[in-house]
Length: 185
Image 1 (spheres, rainbow, N blue to C red):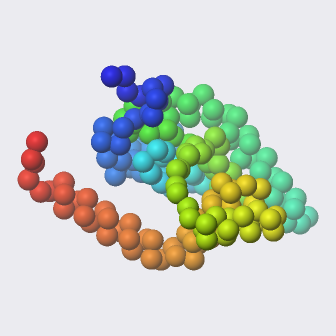
Image 2: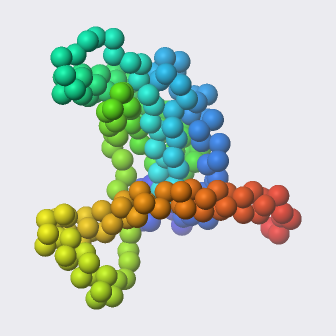
């Protein structure tokens, strides 16, 4: 059976290595000078997102719009100048962690992500839940049920951030206990 990004279904979850050390790996692997410190690295089953803070702009700007335009331009320049090297690093990380890698940069109040993965998620909704999504579409909040569901998930994530952080920490503790337990293989 063929496995990998080109095969149907990608990497099976059971075959994925842990990525607990991804932040440290990227911090050690990235060239000096790209970011002002270690990048923020977030990991899920399908993707690793690496976002670094670029050195601050030194020029004075007439207003916030001018500053935002300059920040966006600097991020764009960073994206273009580092493309080939980022691709090489991503390939190494994808081989190591069996997940796609996406990049981003932050400068001041501006953050841009480059080529992030959009993973389909199948769900079954009953009529009351579908009505919520359809109301969001009818009100112009979203263009489709899919977009409405993504909007709802973001909203819940923003309002439940503390609880979700505690839940993730608890899951990490369980994973650590599992790893330290007896090997049943």
